[in-house]
Image (tube, rainbow, N blue to C red):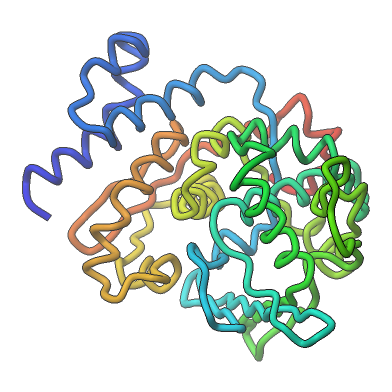
Length: 326
């Protein structure tokens, strides 16, 4: 990483929030020297100006593992993460009645659907989640149009999520804990869709028993304003989730090597050095959407510093969401 590039990283990471606080968002954005910096200013402005603190929720396991970023031909997806790779996620494609594979869920829309399902389940303390207008409203807030190409992508990713199988492997002192299940226990997929009732807007789905219980045991609260700013970038979403999970529980500076980050987030990058270059934009955006984050970038990787949670521990909507941990 040359000196000019280091300076750009430091500006995005270290100065964006300070410039907005000092000069105001409009003047601060005039100081942007690139498209990435403008995007960082816009993300930071949206989160810093948000006084609602609406919450989303995701299973904390997805702070250490995640879905593919792009479509893959493989019918089994494996990803490891956490300290010493203590958590491994295995996702297996579901199959249609004629044995055709449905495919592994991937990309930003699959992540948004999963966030919606998890948030609603925790908010209502119910594994039966309403879709229809509620889901359309959520995706609309995330900038996903209900029509055109987005309509087909949402339908496809909904089906993949509904039919895939999950296995979490968690290392313990004397062995490995294995949790098997699915995201969705019951869903209805009609033979055809009409303009009045597209197949992915069915009234309800029922989350898998084990997944719902694990979600209640390990909810990770996320700030909706930040998710909205990152909604079209799966890598930025993963990094934001990772940082939201890690930073606020740290008691001392903690290094995370590029090798460890590559292992967790580098799917689709053939070489580690390519990944290090490719992570620049999504990492900057994730940190711009997390004003409380304190992270240094070094030649060897990241240094994570103890930071405030992006979601206040005392939250006006925490009771409604029934969060078991923050």
